[in-house]
Image 1 (cartoon, rainbow, N blue to C red):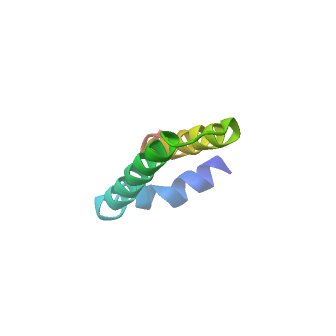
Image 2: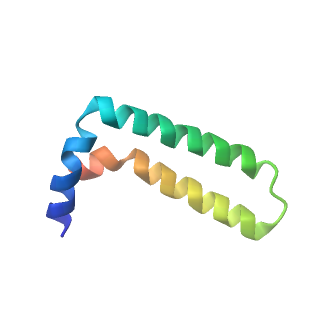
Length: 68
């Protein structure tokens, strides 16, 4: 399964015209969540925001993961 997924994603992550805008979008979303973190008052929301940032940061490493 991993090999099939990697081969499917390789054209995407190795194409700068497609991948760079994707990275920019991820960075923008991380910034938005950071701003939201500053205003959170409930602990559950804080945990959700932290989880969201963690997932988004893992997407920033997609190219390294796919290309191995």
